[in-house]
Image (cartoon, rainbow, N blue to C red):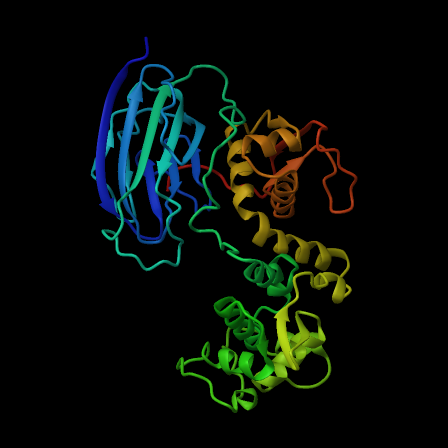
Length: 397
């Protein structure tokens, strides 16, 4: 018979979407994933930057049945740190409520949440405007071998409050600049930064003058642009950025000094398209721009780096889940197929492959199969993922 051994409950406001259950001074990584586990640690992602959370943590003597009524559900490995103390519930500030897990040993934990998908990271709700996010963690001893692939498929009701949600085809096109490598290639370009912000804030086709006017609104001191916005000079680059404007280098046809110069360059390299509608020339974001590394003819290490940075925008979240799974079995590694991992984390094979490539590019995880950009890959072929030389070491600190 399954029995509830102990329970604690608490409610508080937190910041930076932080919700953590941990013993002692366990290392807590920065992650962007619904739920992450390590010995003595659960790191959870709230739905917005300033949430109020209602947390219940339970200890059971064996696996409890799942209950209905939750938006997000996952089950993860867990392990008590002997003599590590209570499992304390914390937000941005240290917590003072903890569950006694002495003797829990090797275990598993069910993570259930409700109310994370009502707003996004940038929402400016105060903590008491909406009902608190509800979180339930249920720990139970599981003495068998650790299997980080067990417990799925994970269920997530939405993309997660901290992800840059596309929201519309228009925003998806603008955010696609990052996946195509342009955010990295043009990093430090004030013209690109202002155009990206203006396009994300409006979501409608604009004349050249209209886009220029909107771009000015993204310049300090945040004043509205006027009829002469196209001729306004771009802000001076901060001293910690590159000496030459990357957009100017890519454009290669002269200096980029004004807002209008930047717009012309973005049209020239294909990030903005010109459409003729009702006698007007309107600008729209190109939903399928040429990849930055192809446009720039990158080869060798520069090509690998550019592709890896693009993956960082598209696949960083799933990479966290993959790395966490490998961390649990560092010696034997995770043996699975791309498809089984996609099913486990309720995502696509392409997303899993991108996450593994991102981890491989940083040396975090290695594979016994060639998963390079040009490799022919069978999603049902078994592979083994192990910690690489660039992996972070777990521990206290």
